[in-house]
Length: 188
Image (cartoon, rainbow, N blue to C red; front, side):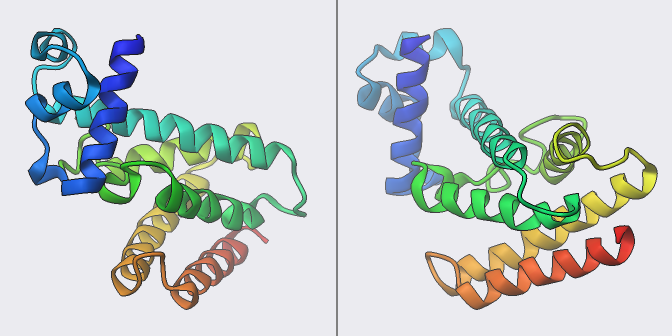
């Protein structure tokens, strides 16, 4: 497992340096200090390595959000929007490779799961957190609202990072306001 973690860490570093197009299994092996055969023992190609890295990011994001939600501090689960966006922003700014890869859309919109697009996987994970940790009631209405919220947040946050490498603060504030208003209207 330590070798695999080194390979994933090397992949993240290389993504920050040269993006996905500059990534190769050979460069990952060199950076991780392992033989190329070790890379192929676990991953058939660079897409598989980035998939494993994105799954690691999704687990990290989920744990970070869950920890913050458990601490509470809000009157209604729909106020968890700030927690979710703030954790995403922190990962974008501080987690190696995340800025370049996010949740995998630059590689494949179905990188996280071949049966659902990446935003669908993220929405399902957030729904689970909102129902198990934040007290939201499971329903079709919640499913639809979280799906719309994830899609809307994804679009506005991409815009925020196109405008400013650290995320345009005004656009980030607008994304939070938009989601709080949208969810508050449906679930107040």
